[in-house]
Length: 385
Image (cartoon, rainbow, N blue to C red; front, side):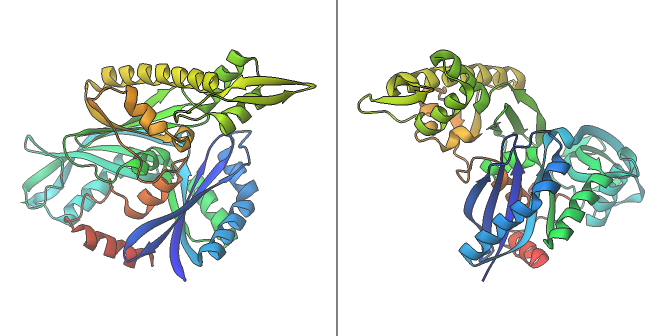
């Protein structure tokens, strides 16, 4: 029986669960499923408690299908439940000395104690840089002499009570909880694993209600970007253009919209009460393409202005990414100085990024000595299994 992990992502109208096995120290994606239970009242904890048995049953079904034993379940923390801040602090050491891993672990803990309250739980601590005697270090400054270290970090935290309530829910399911992962990290690591170098990397997650944009550039992380563009807005525009009610517009969007070139136009008939509406697929797809082309072009211009860069790598995830021909459609109109990057896995949500980051914590192993990639994976494998 294979050992595996899964990641859960709750969106406004449904929940996504990704499954992966760990074989030969590699994460092997298996499948992403959708559970169509809306989170209507936006109460994440109440929603998860109410439907956790349904999610657990779906996990059992996939365990049986893939001869899999899920050892860890990771859960995306919704954006609006996270507290996020960037802060700096000068931290004194006991004496001037060569910095080792214990010093960096102490500095990290000291920083968290300064900025977090007693009832806070630090979900992520992304260290942006260390400053020692005027020199900036992006990587852990092991072996450098110092009496004090100035640390600049990105903190993501929640109230400890929320963490305990979620852990209790998993305990009741008899599932081993891998931990919460902030959605911003999950979004980025749905498309990238390499976060080094000078290149600016951007991921746009076009969800149901809108888009979240995560920017990583030269060791700096920006989670604060939003854009009013999601599948609901496209459906609303579709309904307005062709005089369709919301449910009919959504059905047409799901079943008939494609970004592939259609060799010849065809008509589709949709029942509207006692009558039928006839639509040309060519007209339908042309409208959606023009609408998205305009929205994405405006979004890109705003990204360029805010990031202060004309060239970067960008990846799009979300429900549009599952539509045939979507990435070719993007590449055809996005300027050549912007590289369109395919996600690591063609999933609808960031549920794969949730388990990917949950397993490997790419941004948070910075106080340890550098390991080879096989060595890091081997250590993670030993830790979890």
